[in-house]
Image (cartoon, rainbow, N blue to C red; front, side, top):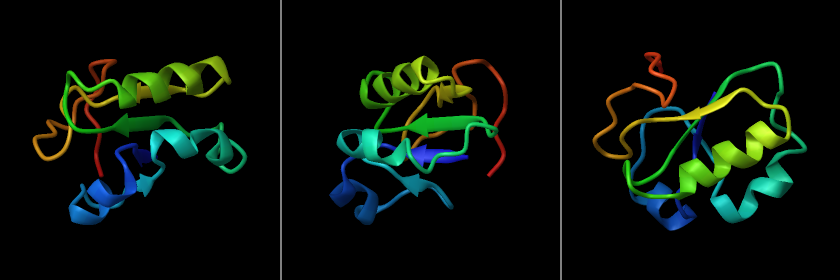
Length: 88
């Protein structure tokens, strides 16, 4: 499952195909519906932007399998922080 964690207005301006938009400030509410049995890949603006790292840290603390893309939108390489390739 792919989470787009940029602010909603950035998501509306353009995003990768198929992600669930969960702005970082909405994560707590989303935890009620995110499936724990799926790996979650979070992405934001780029490799130096902290939103996806913050989300991954929170998800892992809650028992989710989570990683972030090594690059963000729009330059995503489809590689996760664990080094695995992600397919949309």
